[in-house]
Amino acid sequence: MRSGTLKNATLLGLLTSGALIAGCSSDPRAGASAPSLAADSGTAMPATLPGNSATVAPVELPATVTTPVDRQTAKAAWKEGVARFDQGDFAAASEQLKIAVAGEPESAYRRYLLGLALFKSGDREGAEASLVESVKLDATRIKPWINLARVRNERGDRSGALTAAETALALDPQSADALHQQGRALMELSRGDEALTALTTARGLDGGNGYIANTLGLLLIQLGKPGEAIEPLESAKTILPHVAYVRNNLGVAYERTGRMDEAKIEYLAAVDAGDAGGKAMKSLVRLGATDTTQPLEETVATASKTPQ
Image (cartoon, rainbow, N blue to C red; front, side, top):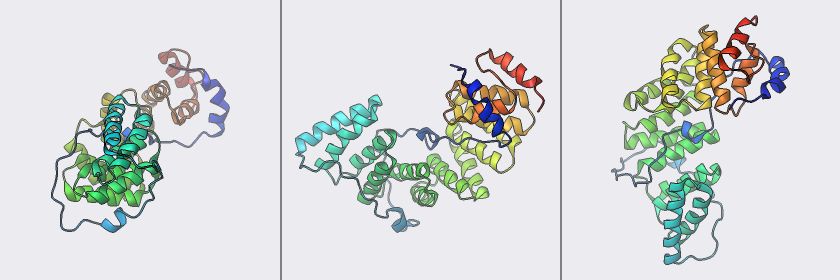
C-alpha cells in the first residue's frame, strides 16, 4: 500500500540527492533458497578441504539450557521445535530446539536446525555458533556449510563466508546455493571477475532462483554494466515480484541506462513492496516524484515533467 510519507521525506531526499543506491537486502532469502528440513544425503568428505581450520574457528555458543534434559523431554522438544519451524514461528522453534540440543548435544542435525531457526528469528550470532558446532560434529553434509556461509555473509564476515562456501563446493562443485554464497562473498571482497564467474555458473545451474538472478544483476551494476544487469533483474522481478530490493535494483539498472520512466515505475513498486531502507523512496524524490499517493501513471507522469 502506497503511503504519503514521501512528502515528509522530500526535503531529506533533495538534500541527499545525487547518490544512486543499488540496494542489497538483508532478507535471509536474498542469501540462498530456503533450505529443506529433510536431512541432506551423506557425501564422502574429501581428504583435504580448503581452510578447514579457519572455517570452524571457535565461536562461543550462547548459554541456552543449563539444567540437564532427559531424552524423553528432549524428544518432545524436538518434535515441537520442528513443528514450530514448519509453521514459521522461528522464535518459538528456537526455544524448543535449544532444549532438544541440550538433551542430545552430539546431534549435528539438531544443531543445524537450531542454527536455521536462530537465523530466521534474527539471532545471527547464535545461528553462526550453532552451525559451527554442527559442522564440527559432522563435516560431511553440505547444507550446514552453505548456511554457515549465508549467515557469515549476512553478518559481514566475507572472508569467513568465502571459506565456508568453498568448503561446501569441495563437497559438491555443482551446488548453485554454494556458488551463490561464494559469489556474494567475492563481490564484497572486490573480486568482481571471480564473483561474476561464480554467479553466472550458479544461475546456469538454477535458472529459477530469483535471489541468484538478483545478486548477479546487482554485481553487474557494480561492475559498471547496467545494460547487462537488466536481463537477470527482470527475471528476478518475474520470480519475486513483491521483493522491494529486487524492484529497486531493476530501477537502478533502468536509470543508469537512461530508461527513466521504467526506473520510476520500479522505484514506486519497491515503495509499495516495503522499501525498508528507503532507497527507492529517495530515488523517486530525486527524480521528481512528489506524491506517491496518486495513481502509478500520474506519479510517473509528474516525475517525468520535472527537469533532471
